[in-house]
Image (cartoon, rainbow, N blue to C red; front, side, top):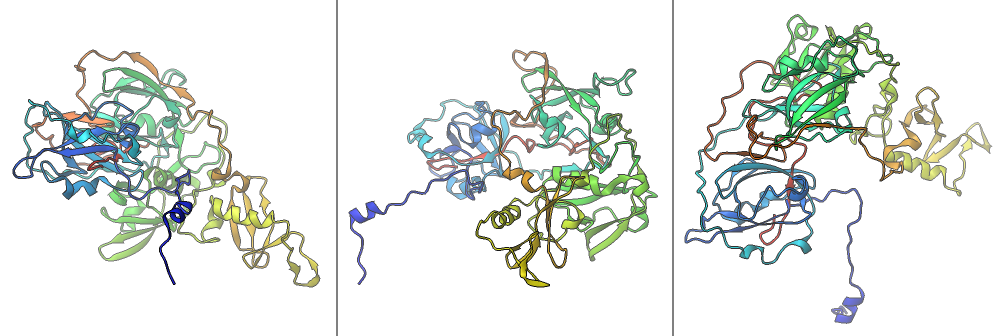
Length: 559
């Protein structure tokens, strides 16, 4: 029969689960903040910060700065007002997948509101103070006057289809200042140490290595629309540098020298480029036609503003903006002599899905590079797309697939593996083939011109694998001592003592502070917005930029 185990048996069989570096993201993480609620007769007291957990997501997202303070009052979570609402009704909004964003709006003792963008993550419960919720609220504090909610415009990013980028996305805040929204982690700006989201653009021009006279001298662009200075990036010479001057929240200024990088798929860098006549923007996960250029082939075939782009040459246009933008420039921008070949674009419309064949007929103004010929981007593998099965879409371009490559290598390196028999002579084995999952495959071949490795079916020549092979990124050893930065910004002005008289506090990471009763900024003027080399633009925003902030996790009523 069945019996319950004794206490000793339970101790002997106790299992401990230890999370290692598995790369698997946790599904239910927090922001690293402990909240408590004031008691009153109606259960509508303020919910306050009781503790910011040391080393937690909030601390990391805010660069360990003491932005969020004990007894600060919570006003909004992800744009939804929760002020004076019972904590148990909305605490679940603080939870989410590891690495996802949680935007909190809080008010301090002076009733000044500020917004933090926190990346959710694991919270060490051992660091949560069990007495944190016993801290008394302040005796005197300025009341927060809650205003009626207004629908904030969704942040809109213009896709850069100009063939050149510096790897920075900008956004215009409510004061008209252009601030860094985020850096493309694979772009040129990410290699310069000291650049941070939320920093305000003050000046831009050609870098010091540009031959004189400079076509784009350094000039003041503070509070100037992106359209007025974007050509410094998009019409400059690729492989040469742009000089930026940025201002931090504390009033200090620094100079950053960033290289222009060519996005289009070129072989020498000397080609004249052209693109499709579309201006695209990204709203959340959706890429939409923002504007169709007059006289372009895109207009002639009938593409309309508002159509949702689904695929380009059968490749899905969804996911991370930086990755989509790079791939769009490789598909939708091309050397002019290749532009007689149309690209296939699939759109979602009110009448269903419609496919168009569009010519790249709008010439770009970016200059030819003086540098040595660039390596053809076709030789660079694209990231693995999980929607593809082995062999699907691979002949078009090499693709990373570390799991598939490892599976092939496990068979090739198996000392007990038996070579397949020759179909024409069963008494002999095929020396250049092996059996993988019941199929006879040719052994890997490395192409001398690109360095890419291919594995094909022995009988049908179907590609099973085409990618970097032994150079798969996830299989290469990493050097923890090697820095990802190749240069550093140059400080040109020390922090100001007290408030900076020359600039208002931007709405950008790690935080944005504004008076509680600030009058909302007027909406941005109509007209197409443009992207300057990773320049994502939007109208006035209340929420901080997307890269350097998302946080969440806590305890007692933990979040």
